[in-house]
Image 1 (cartoon, one colour):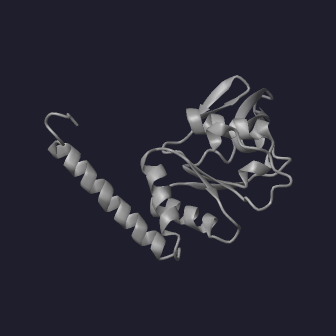
Image 2 (cartoon, one colour):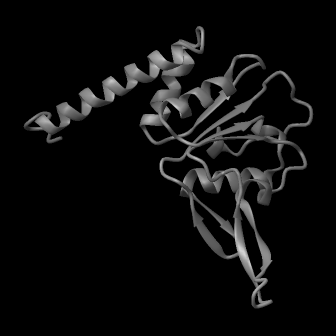
Image 3 (tube, helix red, strand yellow):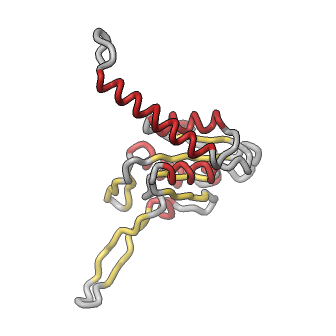
Length: 181
């Protein structure tokens, strides 16, 4: 868009398509989620801006249902990761495994993808996992790839993380880095 000339016809079409997509998504989500209008609006803003979203809230607000419904509405893959104190970076990014070729007997490494390899990720109770695992998630969020060993693996496009944390239970949590807040 040029400041002097205003929006072009192409800009107007793009804006109309975005508005229609927003209405379709809102209609689909409202069939499943009651209330939560502000949360859904902010979720869509994050999604359309190719950003990520952190929700603070008590259990029982249908966060998992909301995100899985959103991914189904958009025909995107969905993965829910329950963050726990013993979760390791490889548990979310994936790992190299040794495979043997039965025909030749030779061995080689193969990358086994972790749950981050989906379009829409629900990172549940993100502040319950150690900083090293939070850092692996942050790399995925910022760079849209994960590094395992010395190899970078590109994540699917689009890639959207919705993280949750429960403000009531403070014991057993780790502070989030400022970049994830």
